[in-house]
Image (cartoon, rainbow, N blue to C red; front, side):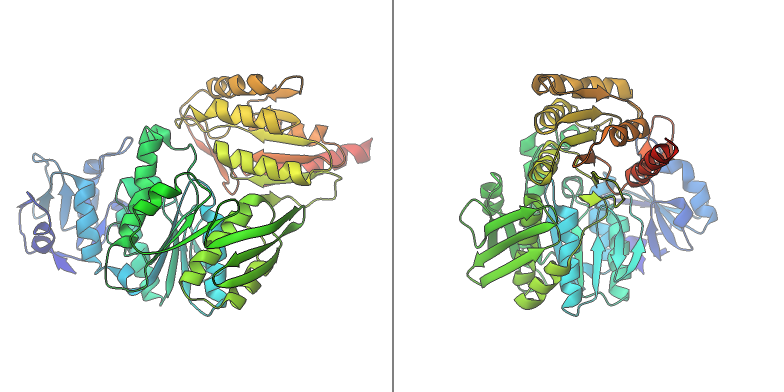
Length: 500
């Protein structure tokens, strides 16, 4: 609990209209969550203006509002805190209000274009097996131990994030393992979080609709390493960095704490050697100054070798017993929607993956090529209202590394799906040569078609949505799960063959 005046004193040029001694019991941006004594934050979003819900917040007990508007009207008795900018103000106010809960737990942050989700799950598993109570914040969900909570952004906004940290602290969490998106870093949603170990996985083209340039995208990623390098309340600060990525040199310049590099190609502190990628898993050695670790894993693909190296680096930095690390990784299966196989009694394989960037698509396709006994059939699309430049690049990669390409809708959002597919087709035509490709706008029809044409030994890759169980269209969000649709397509195929 803080007074409105205490919060206002933290922000330059702030002004209070009304009673300044009002006791603030919580900070909320969703009027439905407001309770007695809340400070209601009036966000002005692209689709929703929080000022329209001031009366609703007042009726539910809000004692004050936070706004940038000097002419705002509020019900009698409701105080107003006016600031120049909402997000910078929140980045200071919110962590202070909740007494900086992240300082009381170890926090491991993972940033990069690809690999964040799998790496967080691997680290969580290792720390849990080491006897710690672990919280996870990621693309798929939030977890506190084995409890699961839904999530809407890879990294929530500063209000929701501090709520989550406080909840984890109250449930006696020792470690928080979290994905840290470039959006969150650019918007300073991580303000007030003292990181103990930061991981950089890689940087490839994505989110240019938001960042504008790859230089800005990299600058956002560097902020995590600026943060972990700052002195704070805790000791043993570490950075774990992929030395095979060309951006590693820049990341290292922003890192002023203990560094652990990992790689397959370049010299590094953790080096993967004798890598053997198979359909049923991967076998390799990690050579390091910490010793040699022999791993025989259930997960497959070179991209997962990098994920394992990052996980080993982070947990070694956190002084976890190498035997626990090794044993955990050898029992680790997979993450929902990450190279996830649809198990069915058919002579071909169907794999669903979240890959939605050029690098992600290339990694998954290269792995499929290594393990495929016959053809690789790729079903994929690109999201609407997002980076348009990557569409032809992804089309080119799919055409080059697949035997059959089926381009379809992903989450078109407000864009016309046909226009997105035209952008993808430009890249497909550049590399497809005499191989077959099809444009099937309806995603369910595209998946059904892939299953219908599959032959013995083929691998069908369904890319882009992974764990997601929805599709965002122009006017609505519908239930859509690639795994469910693929399973249904296989069942229908079996019925047709039986009837024949």
